[in-house]
Image (cartoon, rainbow, N blue to C red; front, side, top):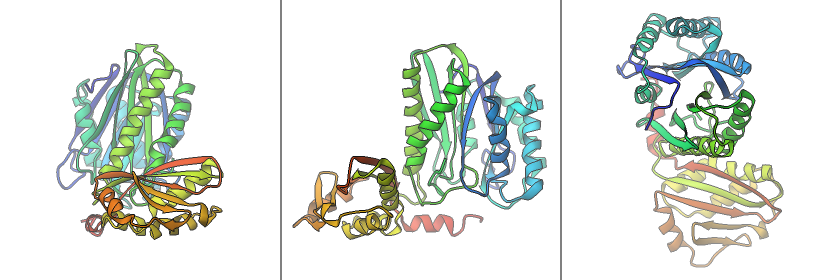
Length: 382
């Protein structure tokens, strides 16, 4: 079920992508609804991010228009004008106030938007809006993704539907990711804003593909209220389920990725210290290439631990690959390798590191780094 009451969706091809694939997406609520967003912390932000971040502060919106295949980032004043024109065209086409329409974009940076094609696509998308158009919308936001990323959950009679895009430039600080989550539950804007920020930190900000953050990262959450009030605890759980599922899909679909690994760090002096260690392990090219080769080179992991800027007692460190013990008291476990290699041959597993300094715990999900990543990104613009 991908229908959520109070919203209509569309996805069309406007010719922005040379492939002819869908590249303009539009989601529109029946009226102004509570809306929340979290955006990239990259200091160089795309025009769409600046526009949407400013407008969503009011806590309400009517919809979001998306262009894929062109980031409209680092395009100067013209890029800002084009983002505004795109929002204005969508608002006029659906009968909304201009300030109620948000914008997102993704693709190649530094290239001006082909505005005649974009504006024509916006008009086509508005004409194609339907309650059953979520699949087309989810397809229209993609770039190097293998396919749409969609998850649906329910909570006390309300629906929560989400989709995302992203496979490279993934290390959210809010991946390249755009994510859109809609619910028909009745909520207040302040509640939605707080939950969106909290869950973005717990889900999208806990995955990485390559350690790079995008100029365009945007997460939008809108609530139509068409299903009426529901249990807020259940709704929070459903929102978490959808965002967590989408975040994990980003890693599974990582450019060139063949394995997904969850890095658990425990025993840190604080949760923040644990996160620093987990993130350093998860983004280390040496660790990620060892994962690709199923090579249980635990020295790569300990090297990352020691390079995280966190105080560590080497004699307190332990490492496990799933059920296989690898390091105890900072020293290799005798005969560890066969069991560790068996674990590393799996498509997904966990690396658990304890540093024995406190109760801080953190989790970051990563993937391997293969030649496929190079193949995609060495010729991204072509």
